[in-house]
Length: 421
Image (cartoon, rainbow, N blue to C red):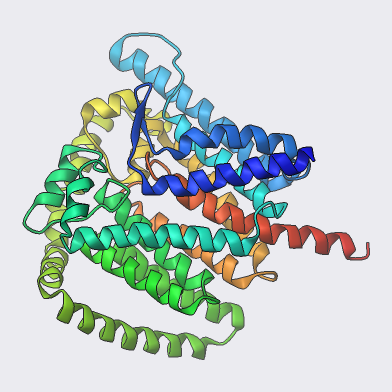
């Protein structure tokens, strides 16, 4: 009876966490967050009570250990930065580590949920798919300037810059995430979700993919479009190599070109002005990268950073980096804030999880391809914005892949148990 009650509580927390994406961010104790964080920690406590297996799985232990070293790295970099640049010596808890901790905890929780079948895979798939469809529809109505949605969209905006971008002549939508670039990244992730995992729900799959593409188009994020295109090419190549049939890769690429051409033609007929604006932005990409935008950020930070080569080992700390200026390329942000040590640990955690997804290939090929390609997409996308460091909507990626990881990993354990020694 106690287990049933705990499992029921877990299902409620999961529903609230997934549903939270449809609500605007809130401020609590000086921190901005989506409401999902309010339910993560009670979920974690409940999961710790019911879990007897997952916490002992090697991969999970490794992720927790790496997270601990990331904390120590941040603590060291921030402390040295405070002392060197601000002449104050005080050991402060690195609040930005909470972003890493939250991802590790939610990965663990949803891994356990999938592993123990606390929520059936079909039910989770339908819940997330419907929530994502609702959020994408909200983004579409923003794009179509549907007045009731336009009037309430301001409560989702995370900054005045997002409002200005939304209200400009060539408005860029931010859906329910409240940030234009975050929304673009999520829409690319949603596209992969529907493409790989919704094959049993044909019309829901088509609708989700179509809405995702339209929302990316109206976010006008070149990084998201480039990342999604490269990821799809990579996925076809990966599948062809796995099946040892290179001819299939050529055939799939021909199919992609045909479908891409038809899709572009249809979108141009429906949204001609938007396509023209997007093509203009793509035309100006080289000059903007090399002269302004990310390049300007890099130049201003690097000029200060190069004054001391020790900065490359430990970084300057987040406080000092914030005082210099924003650096929206995640790899460089981590390098400048925490040095090579911080970079190595952060990406070690990412590649540890990513490499383990190969184990899923023999048990659920679609899940394995989805996890690998989702990582590839976000790693490419992070050269234009944040992935690990995204503050408000960064948990979605981790709980989605964790659930399917857990579902499939259970099959691996069972297979190992029945095999003769």
